[in-house]
Length: 179
Length: 319
Image (cartoon, rainbow over all chains, first blue to last red; front, top):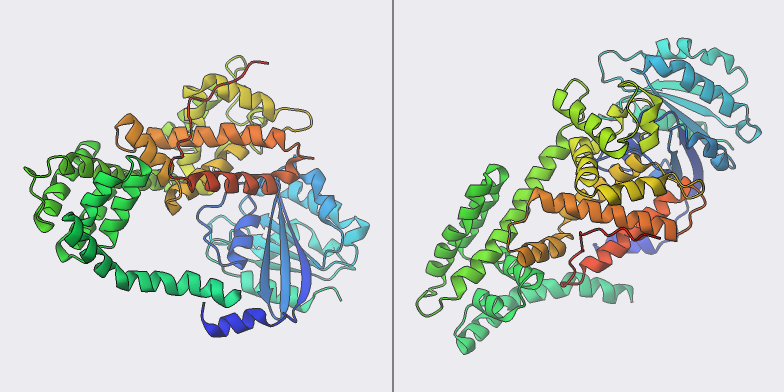
């Protein structure tokens, strides 16, 4: 550690903190996105038992990103993490057409919760690097996202594996942070 | 305090590196033994000796030895088990020539040093083997992968036949959904091989752990937790923290490090994690992250002791 970074460490951090909740079905790519955000190795990702959390600095914000496991046995615990969420990020595997209705059902169900009422929503249309993936607009239509009239929301196509689209999505997150 | 820590961590090793040749020269003159000899004769057999030999070789300034080490590291990437066993012969002869150690005067040096060399490079060889398995993604079109997956089911649930390849039954052994193929993720075939070894070689222990995983309050997803422990075993192997255990195993069995030792190390971790999990009395699966991290710290602490050798004869105590 050099002297400069030493001094920087001693200075109190002025950053505002924000709580980001990362949800979606199992195998959607939540943990890979989390690792991309933290610039960590994504090759050795494992299925999430429970949850992961990382703090990432972005645009003067300190983002505390909560990645909650997506398997159905864990989904009942999602609601324990709703309180004080600033932005909800919902991740969908665009190659998993069979579970499209399942992921859609989960999304609309969790949006009904009062604690998430005013919370902006970013949908990551993940796995765009795979040949048979639906595009973001195809997904928006299939998932009937137009039903989200009142809410601030956005859909962004991304590939968690090569990082495409992640930055665009996070820029939107920082701009639309709940005040 | 801050500055003091910083000095201790940064400056002392640098000073030591500069002083090292003088210390070595001093000791060489007065003991008439080179550093490797002092370690081989002086340090206790096992991890203590092997790690000191490894460190001494890695710090060597001698061009011949540096070249030799590079060749060894390349060789163990792909060599066979037989070729691996031949490696020490060459290393011993090069070191004896460079350090002018006469085998007539020092007959004990060659076998003791050769054993350390075998253990050091068989560990590195193992690392490549494990990495290849990990990097091979699970492929549902690969017959070999599919057969191993079915064998895993049959060994864990011998009394319950699988109704189909895609079925909710997979959740009974702790996979996430109705098809385990996407659950191996970054651990690839390594995760499957680890679980299969556990169910095959430690049948009773595996059934014992699987039963615990179905506990109404402290239950967890067996296969998913198993894959997360593959990640821990892999991480400890790769970082080198696991060297203490592997060098001690190699020494006590008088064998080179091998894939079987890795599987057994994994089985130890999974078996002990299960015990640790129950003892922690978790509220639910959401406590996994914290308990997993605490368990990893315990293992790391044990691995800081040169004498650590995890016992892999997993005994199920009957209640």
